[in-house]
Every structure is written in C-alpha cells, then in structure tokens.
Image (tube, rainbow, N blue to C red; front, side):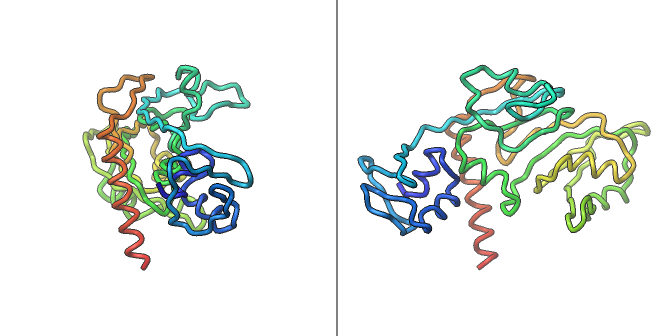
Amino acid sequence: MRINKYIAQSGLASRRKADELIEQGKVQVNGVTITMLGYEIRRKDKVTVDGKLIKSQNFEYYRFYKPAGYITTSADEKGRKTIYDILPRDMHSMKPVGRLDKDSSGLIILTNDGDLIYELTHPSIKVSKVYRVTVDCKITHAELETLAGGIELEKGKIAYADVQVIESNNSKTLLEMTLYQGMNRQIRRMMEFLGHNVISLKRIRHATIDIDGLKKGQFKPLKPKQIRELRIYIDKIVNSKEENDA
C-alpha cells in the first residue's frame, strides 16, 4: 500500500495532506524518514508521523436519510437537534460528507474515511449532488436559463445548477436540480434571488449513491459494490481533471 493511502486510512489526514507531511519530512517508516510520495509500505512496517505511531483502520460507509428539523453537526451551541440525536452512539464517530441545512432532508453519506470526504466535497473535484426541490410558484423558461447560466450569490462566486422541471402548475413547481458546488444554502439563495421560496428540499443522490430504499431517519451500510462504483466515479473525475490541467 502506498504510504499516503496508509496515513489517510489511519484517519490522521487526507491523502493529499499526507503527501504534504511526507514532503515536509515528518513521516518515518521503521525509524527512517521517507520523502518519496509513492513509497510502498509492507504490513509489518511501523509508520510514525511527528514521532507518533499510526495504524491503518477499517473504514465504514453508510447512507443516511436526514429528516428536516435536524442540523448536520455533532453539537450545537443553540441546543438544536442534530443528526447524532438520531444515530446510535456507536455511529457517532462517523462524519457527514457535506451538509444539509436544518430545513432540508435527504441523503447524507457518513464515513470515517477522511480521504473520501475530501474527494467528495473539495470544490475542484466537482462531484454531482441531485436534489428534488419544490418552489411556491410556476418557474418560467427564462428563470431556468438564469439558473443554468449562473447567479452571483457572493462577490466573485457564481452559483450554477442544471435544472429539470418534473411537475408544474400555477401555484408550485417540482424541480430536479443538480449541483457541482457546495456553497452554503445554495439552492435556497438561488431561488431567493429569483424572488421565490423553497417549500421543500431533498437531496436524492450524491455522486453514485442514492436515497432509494431508505426511510426518514434510517441508515444502511454501503455495499462493497456501491463503494467500488463510488471510487470508480471519483477516479474518473480526478483523472479527467489532471489531464485537463496538464
């Protein structure tokens, strides 16, 4: 196993952060400082970072259907309910991949794999997230073009969304919106820009993982096939980005 992956699997840092630690000369294998990023370690090797022995750990991956009314954090100074009020105590070491605001519901991937969290949330990688969104009006074609063309929510920060109308009448519209960014409350702010209110917002897919078969508040471990498909999806995006940057 490559040393950066081993460090990432210890939970100490992401794989990219592990590369930085190696380059800084902070990593030793069997007492010898390692600076080669592609260094391969064996099962019996002892790896230390800043003199502290680390061990690779087994990772766990779950799908979780967050109900509305809960915030995506482990604790809250205001005393609001969090997703960990729902999850059993032995799941409290799992961290959410991204967030959903208090009033939103839907899919959250939970894991102790820091490397995967980084790859699924870093803005440069542009992983897709799909939402079902109901707004309090009929969306016009011009507004759909505005959403696709981008809205400047903050100075120098443009929010985009691929949008498909699922159902529509004079009083409300059900949309499927796909984002490749992770701006705070992005969909709600985009709709506010257009002068509309969001009635409900539910994430139904993150990368290759969907919410199918889950009830509100329910969680299930990812199957090995789902994990493989997710990693293949991420690798394709990362490899494509590296080719374009070359």
